[in-house]
Image (cartoon, rainbow, N blue to C red; front, side):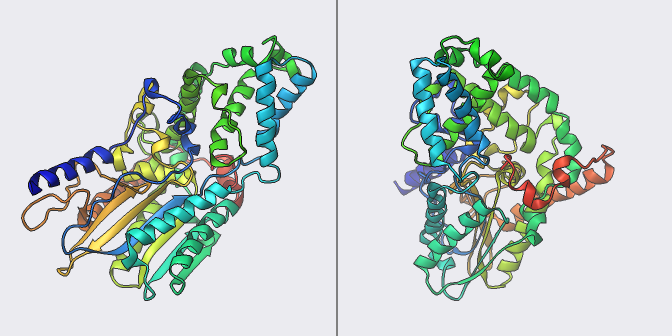
Length: 462
C-alpha cells in the first residue's frame, strides 16, 4: 500500500508540473481571466508541496518576482476608450449596449484617477500572501539568526511590492534581520537585457505584425456598440475601430487586478477574447521566448540574472548568513528569465507562430505577481538539492537534468542535485558567451536601450 501511495504522489507531481494550457474550446466564465495573458492577476497556488527527502532541511531560498497587479500605466489608456465612447454618446451614435459599456468604462476610469501605473490594493495583497506562504512553508529560513536580503528596481510599483512582502515577513518575525535596497546599482542583473539580442529580436517584427493582422477582428463589436458601425471609421478623422477594440481589451484585462465593482467580460465573445489573448501572448513570446525566427537567442539576454542566482546561491550555501534572497522587478525581465530557465517547457521553440499558445502561454509565467523560487536543502552529509517553484507550484527541468536519487536509487521528484542544476545553467551561460564571440549580427542601440533605466522601467512593456 505504501509503495502505491508513493507512486500516486509522484504521478501527481508529474501531472501538476507541466505547463497548463487552456485550449480555445475549453474557455469558460471561470478561466476567462487567464486570457488577460501577461496581466492575469496572481492567485494562490492549489497544488500541495512535496516534502523534502528524508534527512534534508531547507537552507536557502532565492526568488525573482514581478510586481503585483497594477493600474494601466498611463491615464491615456483609460481616457482613449472613454473619450471615443463619450463623444459617440453625445452624438447619439451608441446602442443601448454601447451606453452600458460607456457607463462601466467611466467607473473603471474613475477608480484609476491619478493612479496610473500604481500598484493596486490587490497587488499589495498578492505579495503579502506570497511572503506569508514562504514563512509558513520554510520557517527554518526565517529565524532571528538569519538575514533576509531584498532588492528591487526603482519603479514605484515594484518598491511597494517589495515593501508589502517585507512588512508581511516583519509581522510574522518581528526580530528578523533585513538587508534591503532599491537602486540603479543593481540594474545589470535586475533589469537590463544584453544588447546583443536586440538585432535578433527585430527579425520577428514583420511576422508578428502579420500575425496580429490575422487576429484583429473588431467588426462584430463595433456593430454592437454603434448604431451605425461606419461612425467609428470616420470619427476623429480616421478609423478608430481597431484602437477601441484593443483599448477595451486592455481595460477588460486589467480590471481583474483592481476592484471597481464592474467588469467588461461580456464585451467580447470567446473567439474575440482568444484572438486578443493570442496577440498579447505573441508580443511576449517574440520578445522573450525562443524562436528560430530570432535565432533562438532572445532569453539569453538575461544570462546575467541567471549568473546572479548561481553566485548568490553559492555564497549563501558557503555560509554568508543569508537564508532568503528576494528580487522584485518587471515582466520584461521575468518573461525572458523563465524561458531561459526552461521550467515546465518554458523553453519551447517554434517558428510556427500560430501554434505558440498551444505550448507557451503568458498566463503560466510572468503575469501580475508572477515569480520563480529556488529552494535549497542540505543533509548531514553535505549533499545539496534544489527544487523549483514556478508561481509557487513545483516545476521541472528538461529530462536531460536527472532528478535526485536517494541511497536506494529512488528518484525524488521534483528535487535535483544542485551540482547538476548548476552544470545545466552554466552551460547555457557559456553557450551565450561563445555565441556572442562569433555573432556577426550588427548591434544597434535602439531608442529604448538609450533611455535611462528609470524611464525604461516605467513604460507600457512592464
